[in-house]
Image (cartoon, rainbow, N blue to C red; front, top):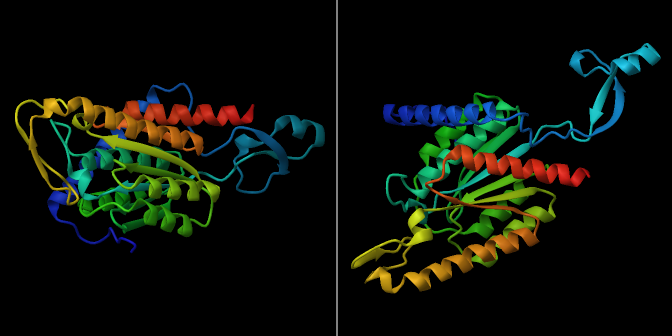
Length: 304
């Protein structure tokens, strides 16, 4: 289903979307101000060949040395002249409702992070689309590059409420089938789903020539488990309930979490998939800086 975000929204929804847009703009503009060069992760800087200038070309790209020798105007062409096409996959399953402290839920964090990435990409005239999912695809916003497209993306993120289980393979496979051109796929999820389906779906995207990045969003308590006293834990996605002394479980729990994260990191690395573990207490600009610098480093490494 393609979401029509032009439908009238209640005032509280409009206010929240405005806050998300302001947050994304503030984070991204502040981030870019601190960079010495623009983080274009879609465009290559490697020169390939010349082509003759035609009306409508940017005069700043004219090679004046070539003009002095030939008395003709030529444009420098680069390895990749089409801007990036990025599809953001945002998990809205029930487990994303979990949140501790003042940071909100994992879904709140994932929505804010996706909004910041979308704003950054649109600012550099890349195309951005959005797929929200749980057990299946719940909403689709098509790829577009206009800056005003941020409103459609943020409206879609607001309209979806977390619910139901996660079926990552079916979602990744459907995304692969619908992407007719190569691009970047960014998965924003807590990855609390069967791992074999996750890796099978990610590899399917890689096999079809797409770049893939996984932003693994976890709450601080999921990573640290700093509970004290008898506690009742309510499982999400029909996982039941458990009342216990968390101190007696902490060591075993932390070992299991480390093994879970390490396996995903290792298998992503083996499949040439970018991977980043993200705490919900981390600031968005720090996460984006790590993401962009890592991608720039990879691109420069492939050109050596």
